[in-house]
Length: 190
Image 1 (spheres, rainbow, N blue to C red):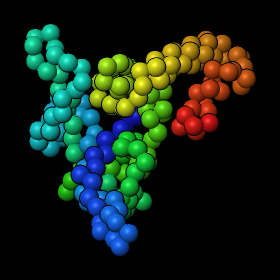
Image 2 (cartoon, one colour; image 1 turned 45 degrees about the vertical axis):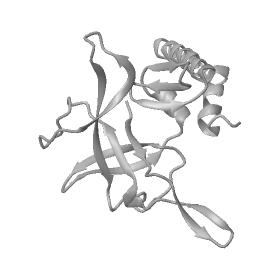
Image 3 (cartoon, rainbow, N blue to C red; image 1 turned 135 degrees about the horizontal axis):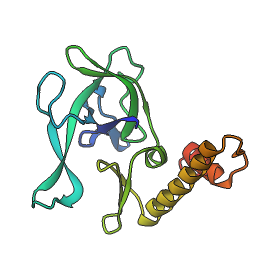
Image 4 (cartoon, rainbow, N blue to C red; image 1 turned 90 degrees about the vertical axis):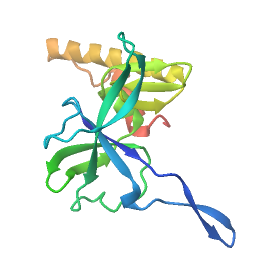
C-alpha cells in the first residue's frame, strides 16, 4: 500500500491590491502534513500522535473510531521543501527518515483517482458526498463517481487475477484497463 501524506492548508489569507483582494498562497512552513500511523498511536521514539476522527461513525462499543496521524515534514533536500501550493491535498512518499523530526523524502502529489484505484477499500457516504479510501482518505465526490470507481477497480482486479493465473493472457487491448489508464492520466477530464 502506498505511503500517503495528507496536506492540510491554513485558513485562506488575502492580500490587498489596487484591483481588490487576491488570495495569497500560504508559506511552505504553514502547511501541515500528516501520515497515517499504523503503530497504534506511538511513534518510533515513543511519542503519542494526534488523533483525527474517522467518518466511520460509532464503534460497536459506543466509542468513536479514531485514526492516528503522525505529523511529518518535507526534508530540506526535497524539491517539495519550498513548495507552497499543491493541486491536491494528498501526496505519496518513498521514504521516512527520523532525525531531529520525522522527515519525508521523495514525495509527489497524487491525483484522487490514483488514491481510489491503488488505495484500500472504498466506502461511499451518499449523504455527505464523500468517498473514503482505507478508512482515512476522505475525498469530496458525487456518490455515483465513487460507485463507478469501486466497480471499475473490481473489474481491473479481475483482469489482473486472470493475467496472474495465465501469464500468456494479452491485456494490451483491454477496454477496462484503457478506461482506468485514461482516468489516472487525465484525472477524469479526458
